[in-house]
Structures are given as C-alpha cells and as structure tokens.
Amino acid sequence: DINSIKMDIEGSEIDILKNFKSWKNIEQLVFEYSFDIDKSIPNFIKIIKKLKKYFKTVYLPASIKTSIRKKKKFYNYFPSGIIIFCKK
Image (cartoon, rainbow, N blue to C red):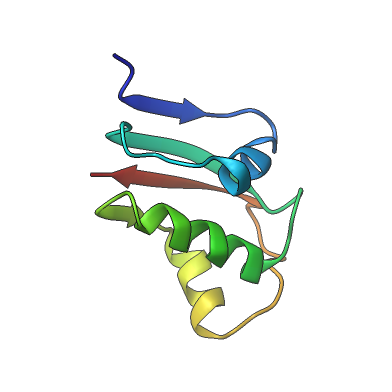
C-alpha cells in the first residue's frame, strides 16, 4: 500500500491539491507549493484548510505564516517555492 507522497512536479501540485478528493489513506505528504504559479494567499489558505481535515500536522514555513497573519493577498517573497509537510 502507498501511504506517503512526495510531490515536486514544477507547479502542477496546485491543481492536484485543489482537486484531489481524499487524503484519508495517506499518512505523510510533502510538496513544494510554487507561488510562481499562483501568488494568491487566499487560494493557498483554502488548500491548507482542506489538508488540515486529513492531517494532524501541516507544517508551514515562518515566511508564509507572517504573510497570512498580516492578511497579505499575494506572496511576493523569495523563495517563491515553499516546502509543506503534512503528517497524520
């Protein structure tokens, strides 16, 4: 059985994360979220909320946490790709 996924597919992660129906059989997920593809922080937050339904831990780097707290609409910082770790 496959229970862990690492995605690094040059920005295609966003479409997968938006459209995937269930992560219930996945214990761990690691991916790079590319703000080069979609700079919208509200879109990013929607994806993270969806992931938090399935994963106990969703680790976000401090740079994005600061942008979310400051209610920024767009992520225009370096690096544009951030690594997200999810674990049940």
